[in-house]
Image (cartoon, rainbow, N blue to C red; front, side, top):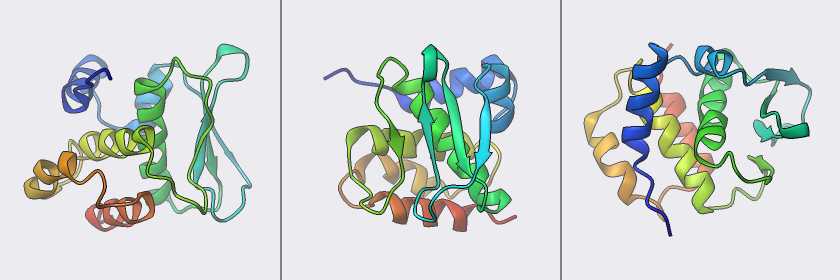
Length: 146
């Protein structure tokens, strides 16, 4: 298994792009974000039609939720870009390694723009089997108080 230093990757990405805004980063990386009608239980996903990564977001999400989902899907694009797998938050909320890593990526990225408790940032890498994806999403929503 290849070790991915997600915190360092996020830091390097923020330094390279000069922003921690996931929407701006996606634009700079030429990853289109498409807002469309999706089933309520699907917040978003990353696809690669014809070798071009595209982030698809449920258009019923509020701005805060969409921001978090873009950060999460950007994590898939940056960390898992070589795969052809379909990443979606669905009713089953798997605890796969890819989902865990995308959640960590989103947490670290959003911590540059929002005051997220340092204890959460330190504890996050050790909570792989403790916090399932829907709870991680709710936690991030609470951390980002708009």
